[in-house]
Image (cartoon, rainbow, N blue to C red; front, side, top):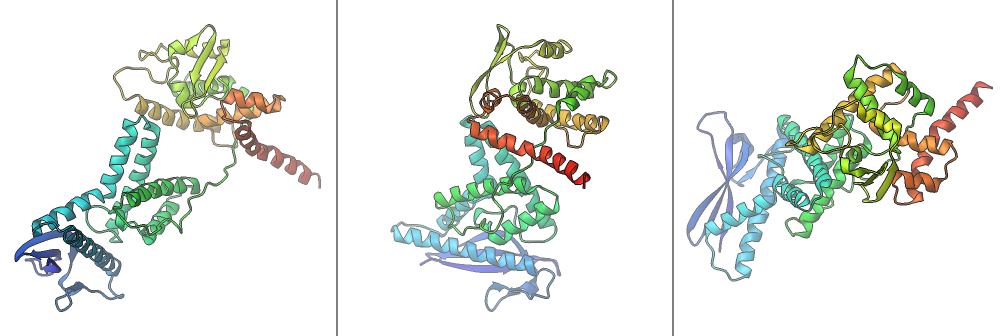
Length: 410
């Protein structure tokens, strides 16, 4: 019968933290299994072989977290021993240690999520992989900051079984404190929950529903659109002395000209997509094929810039031998930053981004009495229902202005 005991080794330097380790004995063979848990001699009880602390201690949250992790480790080691014995396998103390370390490797959030990201990329789901990377980076930063403050996290990283309700709620509070919007918080939470549930399905951890007390819904955001008069003001700006602003304005207008085409679709339009006076492309988000008539306004914009050596139609991804998705993201960031300056120049009352061009085209189309079905087709929506939801949020500003006029007449 194998036995597992928790042990403590004091530091050779008085006053320094010592190390917790596990002693595994089987067939009179002894193996030590080191841990990353570090405690002071006063936080260890020889008589009960447990970690101890008091609520008055400044290290109380840290020590309690260590104790909980130790309990989980012992439970896992006991399950490994029981599994070996149930199967009637011959095993050694070293086998127990190796199986535990393999399990720890699989249950590392970084490793497990990293494997998911690799598979997503292999399956061509690049955008989804990028969202998983974003969520993982956010959570990893939270862990690092929390450890620096001495809270909750022990060792080099958090394990899947260490994702508890307390930690998830603490993560939510951390995001709120940094001014992250509710929808972005929900976005991160839903990704982490999907990863957690996948680990449950693989029997790596037991389901404890750690995300049940945090927000995982979607807030309805008010979409903003610019009226045609403001679009004209942007078009009329003399930005010849500011190339970066001029370029940002051109890409904003190009999105508007192309029926509110999303920037990622614009970036990956190829020269071969323009033929017989029309642009033919497939929306990356929905896969829907769309055809847009090429106009003189569009030609005026691209005539200002050198042709892309990478074979693309618009001057966004311009060179070969680069990471094109990184180039697209960086360009999007730079353009949106420049658009904020343009918004100040025209005293726009909403933040100006590339996405505003899409909303503005939809709003302009509606104001001209264009049927919903036509707007839906023009924007590449899957259904008119999507377009109606899209346009319904645009009505808010119009109604607010009407209400303002009414109130002023009182």
